Image 1 (cartoon, rainbow over the protein chains, first blue to last red):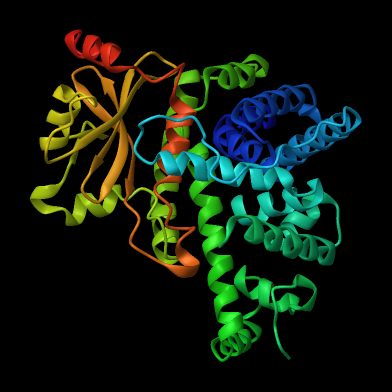
Image 2 (image 1 turned 90 degrees about the horizontal axis):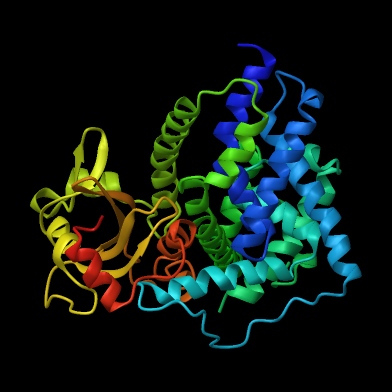
Length: 164
Length: 245
């Protein structure tokens, strides 16, 4: 298999996981699919920069995270504030079984969206995507101690927002 | 040392232990320390439940079919890519992922994401799904309910239908609740292919209540598949008349 084939095959296989990572970074499904889309586009433009034999997933996640951070800065400039979730807020899903579950999904995404970017990305990589501390540190270009302390703060804040 | 929920006061090794980052000796020492400390035990339970909740919400996204727009984006840059083969590979990846996931979920208390294998092996005559041509399809009472029942006129007993909608490829999909299982099935020819099957949450209290919420996985699966709005009663009846095509 050539490097190019490996890239195409790997990218195709990683799309579902890329989407999941996009969902955990974004505050709604539309933003998430948009983010995934732009990540794929940028990855294709930069495909020659990926070194065959290295982890394609980490490379793609890094691209997605960088796009997300760039946009977070743009969002901050626009002073767009995340609306806090009201108690008992209706999610607008009708009689589907688990309408409470749909609210849970919204609550989790809203809670994730309220974390600072640097905590959210660590929570997403380690608690959702299953990266080890060292892998996440390498992906983000951070010392492992920084990653673990951000993870502690992020998961503690999430527990406070979502737990009883 | 007294532990509180203030993250600054908690030994970082506690979280490293939770995440499987400690070596064997250190992990054993931390496990013993946690077991001897009710406050740490509670905190460990809460954080495990949080992890389960996060995976329960986000994993269905990775299990759902990839939207066409994203597939097209990936495909557009590929010099040569066999589209069908890529899709089959993805399916392969997904089915292996499901098994792993089921094991991980069972091990960590919670929502039993995708109980398909369990139902197939343990359900006996209650099994609502069957394997046909390598696909998981609705069977027996579940199949009948999917084909005939209107959500607006639920049956007194047996499987209950929730939402009916069209997915992004135009297929009719229906969510259902059948005893301990809930899920989503979509019309494929004359069959109802099961796209997700979830074990109903067990009655759990305290720290686990959050993790045991009713099927965030199903809701996420529906959200990832639905195109437009769910059908109303009239739309559902019309779809039935047309044989769910």
